[in-house]
Length: 411
Image 1 (cartoon, rainbow, N blue to C red):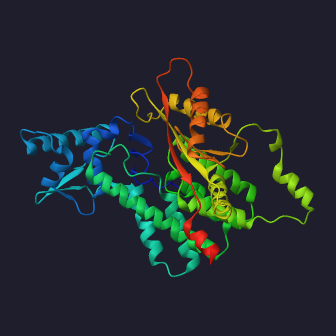
Image 2 (tube, helix red, strand yellow):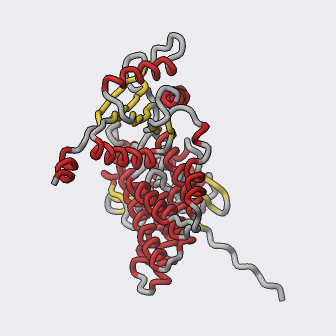
């Protein structure tokens, strides 16, 4: 006897995290960048997302029309609702009353089942918080974390309601990752912690989740991988975004240095490894910011003991009007040239690092402020080509002996 396959239930799938799309019976009915910001879809986004509580007429008009001058808001709303219904019917949805009006409020119909990713993400989060068993709680938080697909309705940045929901979901995602990572840390399950950190870094950039990946790598003693991740992260933040990485990332870089262990060796071999091929390098020592920070602090202590002075110089590229240059491919090229110019303009004992787009830091050892003028001339000469109107602004601070340190030494 032949088995008759049960007809699959008609479901409207709605994506609102990381973008907007709707599909019905395998057919995408909305999803392009233009359609996602049309009034039809703006109406559907609001009603579907608020389908449990509905939306009052006044609130719906406010969300759809905002501060725009509309002659007759009620008439305009009826027109948008009518067009949305025709749009859904033409897209192939069953002919039902999609948008229901009751007591001056509007609701999405119960006749068409909806699966919305934002709603399901939040439900997973709520269920995870209620789970008593730690194993199941971890899986629930991980499921919720991986369900999060990115910013809520990223095309609707001009709509206050969407921006507020976006911020709320970002906080829920952060809480999911934090709680999952706490359990993974307790279980010493660092491989899954690494995977979670990598996912979070991609899906929620600029949220410092790289520190979670780095922590996992350090705890697994994968120091080379952690060092490469750190260097990539610092370069990305400084060179691509023009901002400094957070304290959490710096903190785990310090943990990285403390955690590295080596086999017993002869001091001659260690010295050779430390020096590498640096004896062949000319000009200043170029390094990443945390290394620069360590060199600065070491030099600061040396100054307290010897009484000598050094200078900290910040070089900033300025445009033809004397303002810091704006981001772009031109600034990228000029930033590289600034570093090259600085490296060949200072002594081998001086230290240089990139500090955001269009800036670099230089630590000039055993140098006075008067000597800095010579260094500035060299850098500008090497940097400025032809009749370029760009220039470099130099800010200098003297690194002098600390009076408190001198007092502690004398006492």
